[in-house]
Image (cartoon, rainbow, N blue to C red; front, side, top):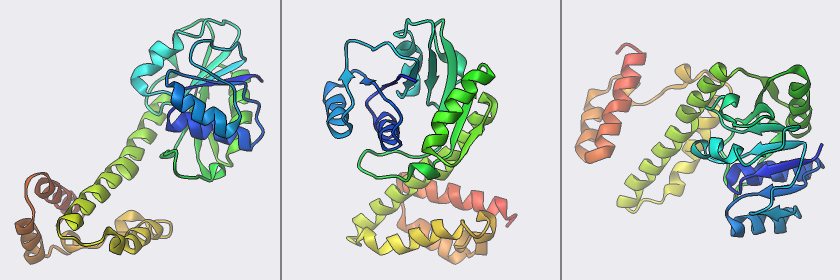
Amino acid sequence: MQTVIIGSGNVAYHLAKAFVLNRIPLVQIFGRNEQELKNISGELNIPYSKENLMKADLYIICVSDNAVEDVSKNIIINDCLVAHTSGSLPKEILVGNYRKASLYPLQTFSKSKNLDYSKIPFFIEAENNEDYKIIFDIASKISDNVMESTHEKRKYIHLTAVFACNFVNHLFARAKEISDSQKIPFDYFLPLIDETVQKIHEIDPISAQTGPAVRNDKRILHLHEQLLKDENLEIYKTMNHSIQKMYEL
């Protein structure tokens, strides 16, 4: 199976690295950012190009959601399989006479962070059983956790991921903003963050909730509100309201 990865961002890099580590043939990485392509090519020893898309059996599109459709138009080979890695787009977004599929890795990717690819859930979809098996076999060489998912279910998986990852990380950034404003090292909070995340491996998040909102400690809530302003105050009020509504306080 001759495979080309299209893209040069975080997902493209990590998927290419997962292919190389698991000795899955990868004949090219293709994209627009020549410097990033060179970096990936140099590290992983994969041929790259920003001009000539190599003929292949499988193309995996790893670009931003708003670019998937346009990028897919560059694939003019009919007898091939094309999969995107988006969590929110249907496979039908792909434009061409080729077979269409999706390969969604449920993880947050940064090039500077090493990952254990075997633990990443992959959600896959294809137009027929033969193509599903092709995608499944490739994903199974990378991960121990490969599942079929319709586009409808995948939309909710992606939405849940935004709450569980992107929003949480934004709260970390806001927390650091507060600690930095008072010259408090953010490292002090890392054990708390680690325990918060580790706890939900053993306890349901609803049961794990602590803090002044779930205790309905109005004195502390009012004190904190006095210390905040602008966006952080609005976030604080919104989060506390959501917690209290969940626990009917």
